[in-house]
Amino acid sequence: MSTLAVKPWDDDETGNGIDGDQVLNALTATVIAVDETGAIQYINAAGEQFLRASAGNLMHQSLADLLPADSPLFSLIDQARAHQQAVSEYDITIETPRIGRHFVNLHAALAPDCPGMVVVTVFPRSIADKIDRQLTHRGAARSVTAMASLMAHEVKNPLSGIRGAAQLLEDSENEENRGLTSLIRDEVDRICALVDRMGLFTDEAQVRRDAVNIHQVLDHVHQIARNGFAKGIRFVTNFDPSLPSVRGDRDQLVQVFLNLVKNAAEAVPDSGGEIILESAYRHGIRMALPGGGDRVELPLVISVIDNGAGITEDLRPYLFDPFVSNKPDGSGLGLALVAQIVQGHGGIIECESDQKRTVFKVFLPMFTETEAS
Ligand SMILES: Nc1ncnc2c1ncn2[C@@H]1O[C@H](COP(=O)(O)OP(=O)(O)O)[C@@H](O)[C@H]1O
Ligand SMILES: [Mg+2]
Image (cartoon, rainbow, N blue to C red; front, top):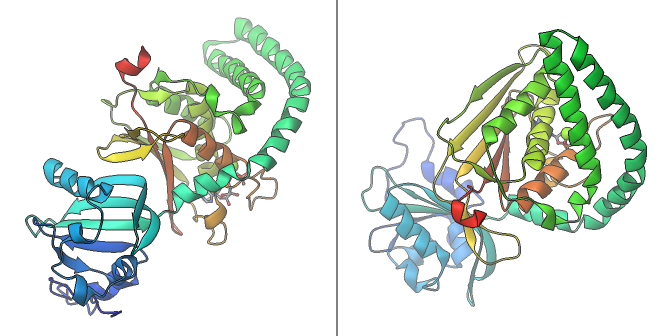
């Protein structure tokens, strides 16, 4: 197997001494470029491993001769061409007797300077694996649930006291404080609902499928954050006002973004901390719903971005596992719950992090009228 992939493009166009080929060959993801006839025009070293052949052998071969015709890879390439945009598909199995079975996420994009050329990136599954792996922690989560339901009674008693007190204050206080007291009441209600529903870790059947305005969810989370745990942190909201409704469970989605924003608030520096909440509509992200069957589009992308010091290297592989925390009094349940809820919604969560910035992206399905009936 050769280590030097063949390339149709010039190296070192930038003149900075870096050979683009070396960069692509360092990737663990497979990168393949195919022309309009489906013939391979470029493949990196990971691609050689993936297809179990040398670049020399693979060059100009038709991808259709190497992979089964019904492989989702081909429909993805067609889609990228048809819509003239990048498309991704998650949670795909690619299998042939020769290359074995691979669980991957796929991305297909047009090469801007090469007409007809599509660049396919095949990522070994990572985030999706993590979410799956979470299911193996159900046992651990269940014991948390058992304890929680035991405690529920004890928690709900004082909560009803707090709620009653907030209500009394609401009648007597001025306008500004009334906003805060109703916030107390709403949050107490949410805790009660949460306690009632601690089955969340074990029971996915309970996810509601309502039309949820995600901006209302984010506004609510923002309000809680800036009046509480994120006081003094600068918030930037960057919403796409035309975003359609998410299909999901409002309370659970509040839970998701509250956890993400809380982590962000705990990560940002004491001065100059900034959290960005973003929403966008993006075509071409698809994933199978839990339980198999249809693949759903996940066009709604909500990002929580912070300028903290990033997620430490040692935590990354376990980020979504329960009880993973590096905070003195952290429970390590936040992201486990987030992953569980996102998965229950048929969505996916991705995380990118470096020493200056951490981005959590949540991809969610859109509400459609047909489902309502
Ligand atoms: N935005 C972030 N920036 C840096 N680290 C983070 C961020 N979000 C999560 N983490 C890391 O992931 C760990 C797990 O988070 P989580 O499950 O919410 O548990 P907890 O917040 O109780 O520690 C955290 O302890 C932290 O180390
Ligand atoms: Mg947390």
